[in-house]
Image (cartoon, rainbow, N blue to C red; front, side, top):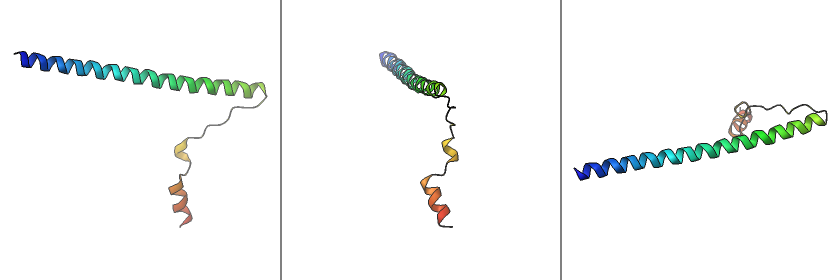
Amino acid sequence: MSNSTSSSLAKIAALIGGATVGVLIANWLDEQLLSRARKRSDYDRTRYEQGLGPIAVTPRSMEPGPAEEMSDNNL
C-alpha cells in the first residue's frame, strides 16, 4: 500500500512541477510580447510626432525564403 501511495505522491509532485514550469514560461512569454508591443507603440508614436505614418508590417510567410528564391532562378 505504501508503494502505491508514494507512486501517487510522485505523480502529483510531477504534475505540480510541470504546471509551475508552464506558468513561469507563459508569464515570461507574455512579458516578452508586452515589451515588444510597448516598443512598437513608442516607435509609432515617435513617427506620428514627425508626421510619418506607421510602417506596414508584411507577414513573413508571404516573403520568399532563400530556398524559394534559388528554385525560382533555376527555372
